[in-house]
Amino acid sequence: MLVRISEIEVYPQYLDEYLQYARTVGVTSVCEEPGVICIYPMQLKRDSCQIRILEIYASDEAYKHHIKTAHFQKYKTETLHMVKSLDLVDMDALAPATMLQIFKKMHK
Image (cartoon, rainbow, N blue to C red; front, side, top):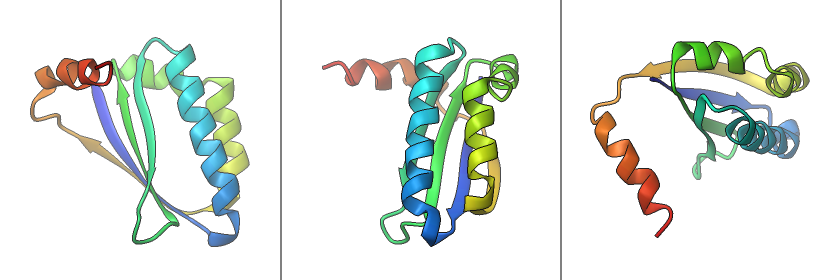
């Protein structure tokens, strides 16, 4: 499993447009790619131009496939000028066995 948090700062004048792209690529990726477990974009309440995206992939191969898809390439190329900074932070899951419980709770 690959877990990552993308830390993104967006230029204010592009914020609304960027948010739409982030929502769209997340939904499309989760719906169309079996190896994409989660792409969950979030916006910091204290600074709306700060975006965090929780990304969870079944494997490195699933991530490599994801970044080659047409929907990701569209997101990447069409938002490049909107992004002031980007940091991809790879994470170690401390309790990966609880992930199944988290997603089961969403259906209650």
